[in-house]
Image (cartoon, rainbow, N blue to C red; front, side, top):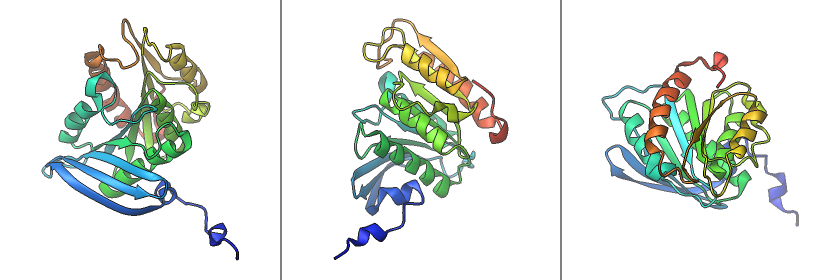
Length: 242
């Protein structure tokens, strides 16, 4: 007997690749819902910060991911939570992705890409910024390259360089890389390597801070408050370097 799976067509989208067989969700607050997607290779969890009903959609979205161990809070003691509250209140949904299989670069790339597809399809986002911490920096870069028509820019925090060999495919899309000068896991040279491969971008070195960027929350917030509006405002076909 032949295995019928051999005749299945290849997945056409990241959501197809997930092979979802069930979902459930609860609304944690009026502006935050918890979505679980049961997939053939694990459970994908998304915390989804939604704009208030009385705020018109901005056409933008932010999609965030964690490091090799997963996680939903991000660096700097909950940066992703703070961004979610801030940007969703102004009309920009923020999705925080917990991987099906942490530290699996191919699976995690599909997870983040599927989240981008979800926010584009359900809330009409036309410009998405991907963000990733540590291992997640490589995931954010890879999705930025793979979904260039949707991803307006990429932000990384203490990123690794492994997995970022494709960064040249960003082709001048805005790229900002934050890195602590006392990172005990990944040295700042990792971000410098990613920028070199990409051929453009801005490195923000954070004196005295380590891998979790626990001392730099205010700096991250300040720089992202400047960088995100510029990135979102740039026409996709004319996105500025750096």
